[in-house]
Length: 184
Image 1 (cartoon, one colour):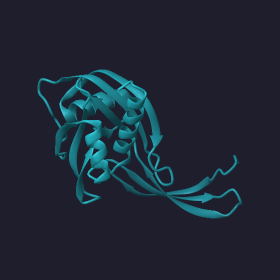
Image 2 (cartoon, rainbow, N blue to C red):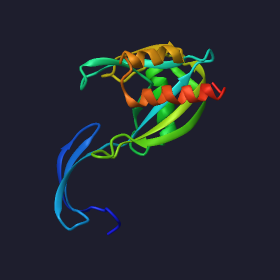
Image 3 (tube, rainbow, N blue to C red):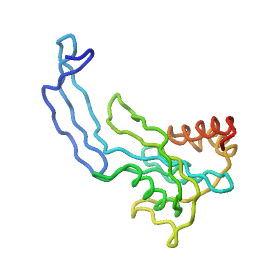
């Protein structure tokens, strides 16, 4: 075994859904004892920091049922099976905001909650935006409103917890650092 590796000896599939699968794995720990791990499997997602020519950031407001409240967030969405993350980013930007990016740049990726989930989130910077002809086309079960704010406005929303998710907080910090370097 590799250092700290946990060997799976049994997997029990608990739930299979549209967005996630849940299983409980029985594992052998590095010291030889057994334990269980509850694991959420997710196909991955993208998050897009979309900048207008005026230097505003495009965000969407939507209701988040697990939190029982609406949040302002950067556009984001789930990868479809076999879909390249950059294509997901282009699709989600257009569907959620009604914008198409003439330039989209990969920034980084990160696991969202590696203690229990395998979801990876790919971040992209999108600029040189143009409005698409048929505008916003969110999914049938997705209700969003699009806004454009300055970095300072978004930072204020973060303090009041109108923005309260990690992907959007990351975007704000990324843009602050970029702005400090004079590349905003």
